[in-house]
Image 1 (cartoon, rainbow, N blue to C red):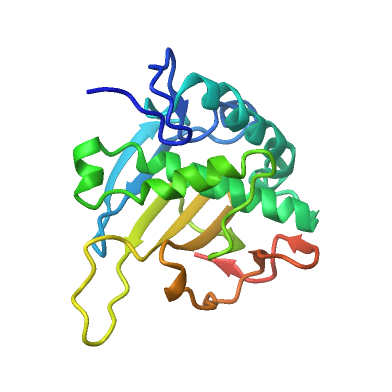
Image 2 (cartoon, rainbow, N blue to C red; image 1 turned 30 degrees about the vertical axis):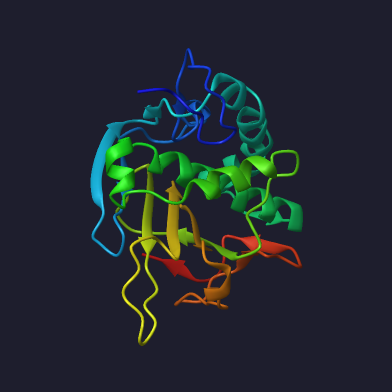
Length: 234
C-alpha cells in the first residue's frame, strides 16, 4: 500500500518509526513496566494492548516530521513534563500549559495510528484533518480552538504510562446517529501525571465542558496553575 505521512502528506517512505510515547521516558528514572494503549471505536469500548516500557512505534509518519518538528516538540516538552512525571511540584506558566496540551494531543493522535488503515476507516481513528491541523501549527504547537484540556494527579494502581482515545458521536434529536466522530476524548497518563482533553471535530457542536472532580484547565489557559492540584484522581 502506498505510504502517505498523516501529518504533511509526504509520500516518501520513512526509514524509521515514530514512538507513541517518547523514548526519553526510558531514561528519566521512571519505574519500568507494561504500558497500556487503548484505541477506541466510535462510541464503543476501546481495544487495549500493552508493550514493555515506552517502546511502541508506528510507521505512518515521514522522517522529516519524525526528526523535525515532532522531535522539537518533544525536546521542548521534556523539561516541563519530567518533574511532573516524577511527582515533583511545579508552577506551570500559560505557555507551559499550552505546550503540555499540544504534547498530549500529539501523543494521542500518534497512538491512534497503532490501528491498521482498515481499522481506522471502520471507526478506530480520528479525521485526517486533525493531523493536518496540528501540522499547520508546528511552528507554535497548540491544540485547535474547538478543544479543552485539563491536568490532574493520578493515584492508586496504574501502569507507568497509558494513553486512551475514544471517538465520540454526538446524537441530535431528529437526526440519524453519526457514522464519523463529532468529537473525541483523550487521556494520557505517565507516572502521576494525568492530562485529559476533548477535541470537537465538528465546531458547531462545541460546548463548554467541566470535569468531575474539577481539574485545572490548561487549554485554553489564562493564568499560571500549580501542580499537583489539590484534587486527586483515581
